[in-house]
Length: 162
Length: 102
Image (cartoon, rainbow over all chains, first blue to last red; front, top):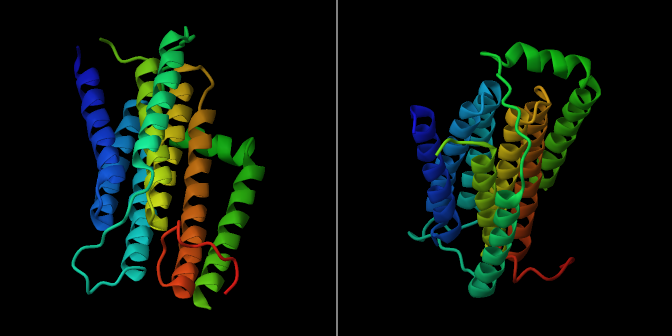
């Protein structure tokens, strides 16, 4: 077991444990902070897979943007005067059984499949290669995503302003 | 045991199932959104793992970037909707919101 494997298991433990707490704790603010650790762990897994730029984007967009937005949502839609911000749960047992069966099924399929693996050597910095792909082959999707973000911004602002 | 593609796929499966569990069992709409974010992260791990082990070049990473952009747009719109629901119904529990007009 080399250092790569140890780091992989470390990040996996952080990701899965905090994701488990996200779906099991009853306090919404605590769940939001555990989600922070999940995003950090996933970002570490991206780095282990050689995707440095995607890991940085994950940190900037998820931790810096989406999570802050969610904490704002929690604070606005709950009465702050109450000390405990709780959420209820429904159908816990059937959901656990169903999700457990699904996990077992997909896990068995993954373990059973003989994956064809070609271990490609990632470039040290994926930045220039990603930029070339983004502005040559995928430039249409790039522009469409820009328009989509503009529409989402205007829509969210006009919906929340009423 | 050396870390291979299977390890990453198992991790993303577990993350996906935790997200499904969160979506199904939580009452608060914002907690449902958090479950959706977990699912999107699981799909991103799959994209990047196949980009690393599947000899596709960098296209998997590019699609992970697209997924992150869509997640940002989705979170902004969904939270605006949640704020409007809160103004109308005074709570955001998804099992009590059953009227489209007031």
